[in-house]
Length: 222
Image (cartoon, rainbow, N blue to C red; front, side, top):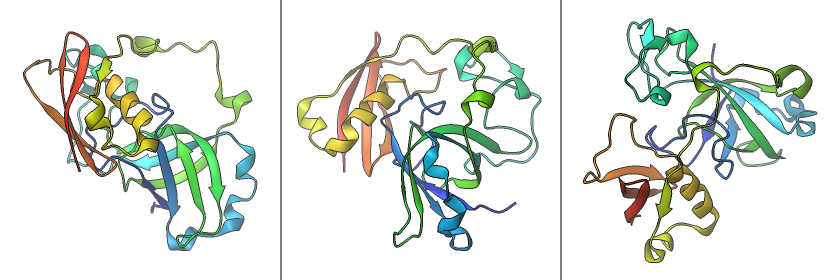
C-alpha cells in the first residue's frame, strides 16, 4: 500500500495527542492528498457525510517484532491485555483507524482538494492509506459492549492557564489546547507533581505540571 494523503495537525510529536479520536472536537486538522490523488472527482459526494473513517499508519511507532500483550493506558499501564483487544500503536501491522468529523471540503487550493476535519488524533504528517464514509445505520451499534474501555474516561483535569500565557496561543487554538490538557497528556505511569512536562502544539512548546487533579501551565514558548 502507499499513502494517498497526509494529515496536517497541530502535533509535531505523539506526546499530547488525544488517546482516541473525537475526545477533543475542537482540534482542527486537514487531509492533504498526494499528487496522484489530487482529483476533485474522487471526492464527489463526500460532503454529504458528517463523519469519515481514516485508515492510517502509526508512522512514529515502527519497530521490529511484536508482542502478543500490551499495557493499555486506560488500565494505568500496569495490566497486560491482548494486543488485538486494544488500540495500542504497537501492533504486528502499524495501522490505525480514526473516526473524525468532516467540517468542510475545499476543492481548489494550491495543494489540490483538502478535507478539513475535527477531532483527529494524529501526529502532523501521518500517512493516510484510505478514507471511507461513516455510515450511521451500519457503523453505529448502540448495544455494543466496550470491554475494559466501555465508558468514557473519568476525572478530566482542571486546567489553569494564566492569562498572560494564554495570550501567546492563537485565539482559534485556545479551546482546543484546553481540551487536550484536560485529557491529561501524561503517560499513565507518571504522577510526579514536581515534574514539568512539555509538548509541541500549533508551533508552541506548552509546559505544565499536575497536582491534585489540577493541571497548571507554567510556560508557553513560541
